[in-house]
Image 1: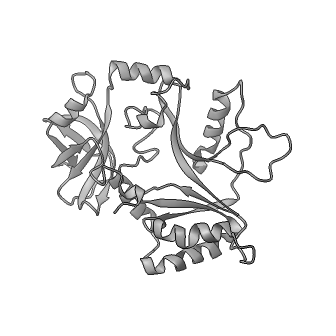
Image 2 (image 1 turned 30 degrees about the horizontal axis):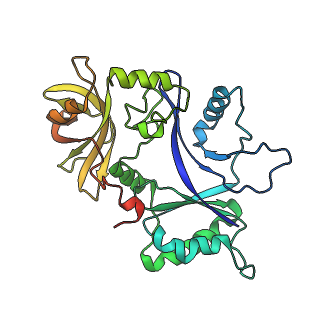
Image 3 (image 1 turned 180 degrees about the vertical axis):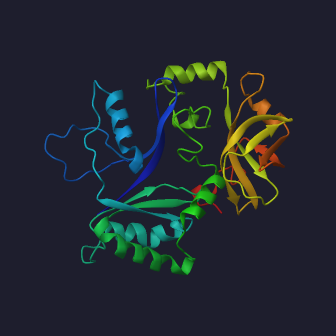
Length: 309
C-alpha cells in the first residue's frame, strides 16, 4: 500500500518569538490500523531529529494543554530515503506504480511506502518512508529504475552544499532557539496573514511592528576560499556580525555564507540597510569582498523545485 502526501515545514515558536525547533511533517490523509475510539480529525505525522524528539513532544503538549494533540511518541519503524532531481521521471515509471501495487498479482516490494513531496536540496524531490525490513529491496529498485537517468548516491557534504546554495535553513546553524522566524526569513512558516492564534504570535507582531534588530543575510564570495562559519562580517568598515554557516556552491561557482547582521547604531536592520552597504568576510585575518543577497542566488523563482529545468 502506498500513500502520497505533501510535506510541510513549520517553526515551533516560544511565547517570546524565539524558535523552539523547526519541524517537518505531513498530513495523514488515510490512516489504517488505528485503535477503536480514536478522535476523528486531521492527523499529522511529525518527524523531528533524534536530538529534539523530547523537546518537540514537550512543546506540543505544553502548548495545547486544553486539547492534547500528542497521541503517540515512538521510534519510527520506518527509514527514509530521498530522491531528488530525477523524481519526476521516476515517479511515473516506478515509485507510485510499484509503491501502490495496484495489481494484486504483482508481489509488492513492501507493504507500505509513504511518498512525501519534500526537498532538501532545491530540486524536485520525494522522501520515501519505508519499513526498515524493506529498505534494501526498495533502495535497489529505485537505483535500478534511475540508472538510465544518471541517478547516483549523494553524501551529506553534497547535501550541505546544495542546501546552502538553495538557501534552506539548517537547525543549530542558520536557525537556533535564540532566533525568531522573522529574523531568519521564515515568516512564511507562520500564519501571520490569518486570524489563527498561535503561541508567540503577539511577540512576532510586536517585532514586526518595531523592526528587526538583526537579520539573516546570504553572502557570496567570488574567490574560491574555504569558509566554515564564525568568520567576521564587515560592512562599510565596521563588524556587523559573524557567519553562522558557509560552504561552496558548485552550481554558482562561489563560496556561500549566511550570517545575522546588526546595525551598529542600534537601529532596526531594514532591507535598505542590507542592500546599501559594502561587505567583506574576514577569514584568518584576511578580508574578502562579498556580495549580500536578500534571496538565494540559486533558482530564486523556485522553478527547479517544481521540476522546471
